Length: 496
Image (cartoon, helix red, strand yellow):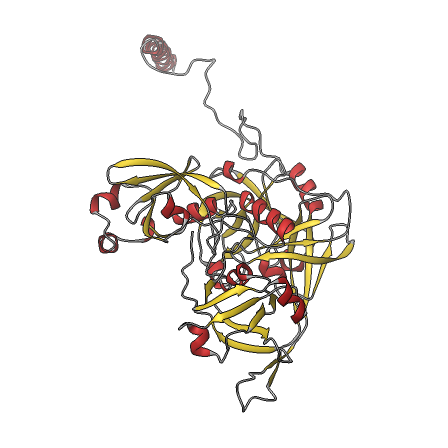
């Protein structure tokens, strides 16, 4: 038995010795882990250590909910009587009754004395606007002004030392940065959601349903936004307002992955104009544009854009320049490509319109454009629709709806018991002459129940809707108010 065991033990000992010698010999030349090395493994429930600390939203969320309010609106039903003094069969008019409507949304306090910015579609046409704070305090607000082109509005409540939100610089927003969406979705109490910025300068066409002069350059995020969030805040991690939530991309009407906010730099300009003037005073270049990103090579060649320019040129293509506009006076021509405004690169039409929309008539902007193989730089003085370069200024007779119109004088307004209005001086051959029995001398004082003080108001209101129009006014020397309805097909092209 011993003769059998002894050889087995000897063999095992020799095998161990050879194995140990082989390990020592090869370890000097092979990348084995030493006793001090280790594979970086972690428990699944414990986060790996990182030099970057997790993003903390608590401070931004806590301050934001105090500045975001819940807005409830009531639009009372109306009886509308349409009467045409030149229609012998319409002496008694026709009456139409509209039902009461309730609505809700969100808003952001932007000043300690009670100015609140929200969406135009939240308060448009409302007879009563009620604001509720996060602490459930409720106030009645007054609509100061609206701007359908950007879907923004400003309302006001009485107060002081209110918890307002500071505005951040939306130009500094980066793709991938964390943001919060704060509002009152689905009639819930104030709700905070988080996401990242997934795109900038997005145009989705939604504002064109309310304005042919629409301006869209949305910040796109994946923060959850639902009905009721409209007018609420898009906030960075510092608690600054960088956008007003306005729309969602959804096949169902509820959140499906993407939401869109109006950049805060544009919000600031529009809100300041409404607070100061009661409306937005907007400057225009005076050009018709085509976006290279939204056309194919065949379309480009039909417009006169060469294959080389289509593939290699950055910027927005000028298809036409309005005579006597700021662009025309600066020397811009059809075929030029606008590539920069005030040093900011322009790669799409939404980016251009958002940049220009920040300025007033009379402001000068620095514009870089490409013509042929060369780049040029010029200064453009912006004008309003009437061709004026001063805020609120008009220049005599203006063509609106194919007719010539002018502002009524203060003496005419006094005699008609109006605060302002626009007189039709010549019907021309446009839609006003084709679809109504309006006669020269008719004074328009409202369009779609919105007051018209001058030709700028009239043009702005006509550019704010593609729906049918109801024009109200008076004839000097006649009693009564007269209403005319027509399709809004103004031939004046929207300018940029």
